[in-house]
Every structure is written in C-alpha cells, then in structure tokens.
Image (cartoon, rainbow, N blue to C red; front, side):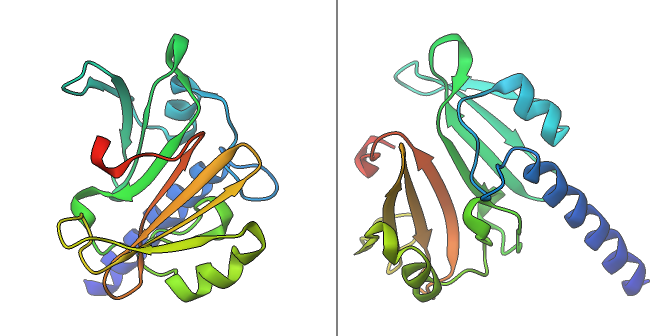
Length: 171
C-alpha cells in the first residue's frame, strides 16, 4: 500500500514539474509578461482572482501538489511578477522552479554561490517575519528581482520574481 502511494505521489509530482516547465524559457527563467489564461492552461488549474484590503487585484493558482503560484495583476490582468510557495508552508519538495531552484531543498549557501555573479545580497529575517531566524537573498537579473526566502535551517521556502523590490511591510 505504501509503495502504491509513493508511485502515485511521484507521478503527480512529475506532472506538476512538466506543466511549470512550459512557463519557463530555455534558461529555466519564468517568461514575462504572461496572461492569467495562459498560466491557468499551462498548470491545468483554475485561476482564483481576489483583492487585498487596498483593493489591489491578485491571482493565484493553488495546485493539488501543494505548490502555489500567486501574483498581483497589472493592466488588463497582465502578469509581470510571480511568487512561488507551498500552501501553508508544507514541507513538500518542489522541483522545476525558475533558476533550477527547489522549494524545501535548495540551501542558502548553494544559492549564494549560484547567484554571486548577480551580486546577490543576503539579509537576516526579523523575529516577526514569516520565517523568523531565516534569511532573504535578493539579486537582479535583467528586468526582474529575485527574492528567495529561507527558513532558520537555511532551506528555501519561497521565491518571488518582481520588477521592483517589494517592501516586506507592504504585505
């Protein structure tokens, strides 16, 4: 019975990776701009539209695997940024992310080395943050900033791709 669930889990996991890959370019970078329809079709997940307290429009794609993509929406529902995380910070290992990163597996040290050519900067996260005692690694590649959040064990928990640096106090 356990082997059956393991095989089913691996099958679902592989399908997720393949669908996300269709949104990445040959360098494993997320292609911008996107449309919500294209993302929904590629992931085979219905787009969930919502607004925050400031009436800013957002979209998210919660996948059965536990991976969740979300973004703010630009004019005409254009997608020019993207965030990757797991629902409720589940310890699920998710491969196939931009830059070859793996949620709940990539480490801070490996990422520092990998992105040093982009002048990556590291900062400790405050006690009141989502990952107290963790770290944030930020670098800019072409038009987008990448913000990687690591927990106190220096394991990747979240990835954000934005056109400008996001003020953590804004969220």
